[in-house]
Image (cartoon, rainbow, N blue to C red; front, side):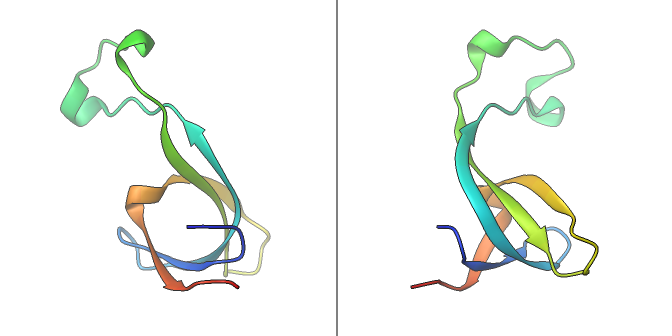
Amino acid sequence: MKVGDLVRSVVTGRMGVVARVFMHKLWETDTMGKKVNWNEVEPQPFADVAWTNGDGTVRKVPQKALEVVNASR
């Protein structure tokens, strides 16, 4: 996944364009519990996605929750 790729959320089906890729820690309470310990978490690939709803919304999304629809050159 790279900047400029057209992506779809596997959760909501929304389409967007990748604005930035980076590593970020995520604590998933559904699998890791409520007591947060950042020393147990490794950074994972994330993307800032500009969604196509037209309001300029950019959100941080784990790349595992996105699928590339059309790769940029």
